[in-house]
Image 1 (cartoon, rainbow, N blue to C red):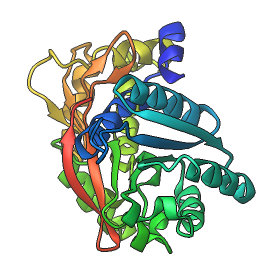
Image 2: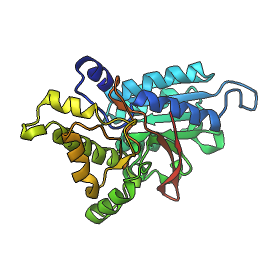
Image 3: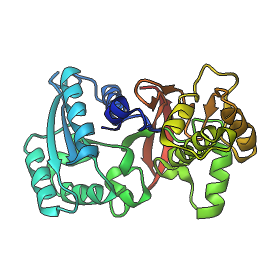
Image 4: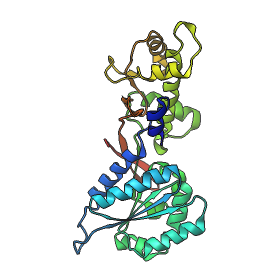
Amino acid sequence: ALTTSHQLEGNVWRVSPPDTFQAKVVVGLIKQELPPNSLPDGGTPVVGVLHIDGLYGDYFGVPLAELLNTEGFRSIRKPIKRNDLTGQTTAVNELSNEAPNATVIIGFPGEVRNIVSVARTRPAFQPASGHRWFLTDATKDPNSLTGTALELEGALGTAAAQGAGGAFNSFRDGFRTRYQIDPNSLSYTSHSYDAMWVTMLAAAGASQGGAAPSGPAMQAAMAKLVATAQVPVPLRPDKWVDAARQLAAGTAINIEGASGKLDFDLDAGVPLGPYEVWQVRDGGIGFVRFVDP
């Protein structure tokens, strides 16, 4: 939806790559862990997709289910509503009848806790049955593991990459000092940081000659944040003055944020950034590897 807005208006830019890209990463991960025709009888693995309804869940869950089918799986997609325990229980029961080999949860920590709490009493979702859980970006949160860590131990998840950029260490130190939590245990913290930098740089670039920033001028300044320009500039406080001056002078710059290289696709208004694979380990969240979509 945001990509479409950029294509229509030209003034909506996103720092995190879109979930249509993440769907490809999820499918690739499932193919590695549970290849098609890998069942003892050579049958097709069944993958459940439980996703909240609305823009986030629909634009992620629908393409994910379609990609799974294309790649040789049989997907069973069940939309659910937030804070609707009765509806979520019904979806889990219906999915249980299909005996899924894996289930992907697209939602928030509350949905994870509710779904896993119901599923723990259903034989089809037990590890002894060979079932695997897969989680996604909004579930990358310690709150997802409250009361569910035992069942989710070893579960793999995906999210837009944290820590893939040269500015991450500086950001991480400041975040830890301010909030006493490691941003690696959450999703999109570094992207939020980078988004504020992009906004401030666009305002600086739109202020040539002391003019007040305007929407069109900020849009033009954002278009100067390109990968082809010079050596990457890390988005750190000590680099602010030089980066702002260059943009205000109309010079294009190549920026590298805390989330990764912000190599924007100027037609889509999105960066071609990496994703990460994470895992529930010892009751917490651990990094596994970076993946390009």
